[in-house]
Image (cartoon, rainbow, N blue to C red):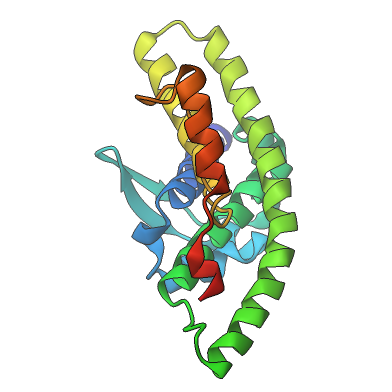
Length: 215
């Protein structure tokens, strides 16, 4: 194997690991909440490119190697469905997932004057985050559509199942970036949620007020 081929394969493998890492962070932010170096890296394209990390997923050890931002840009089209834009959407989504988890864990006390001031600042931040989250959701849908197109061409049942599972979990995790009650998808397949009775239950659920918003 020549040096060019070896370098290409190394970069491709590293980017696959990066894609899997970003999707994993979005699905399981609590697992990475204490990794300050990762969060810092996620806030910059160049920092993510240079960042090195080893992690485990489904019993498999994966490693993201250090690379330049130019190398990352050159290879993203071969790994991410939307190329560099797809990578960047996942990067931002992963950073927001960790930040959102930490904010929920350290939520302010809204019953005090100081707490109300903090809450007002939090709401202003959330308004800005909503716009970014909506963009992430749109890009996430595009990524998932690309994954489903790939699934349609596969013939191995095990691979089909894994890719479908990853696509569903990624979309669900992206939706989960929203604050309640917009952080979950309604499901007509759950027990007791089908037919007229199920529709009535879903309508009732949507009308329930979250009292925590007024405390």
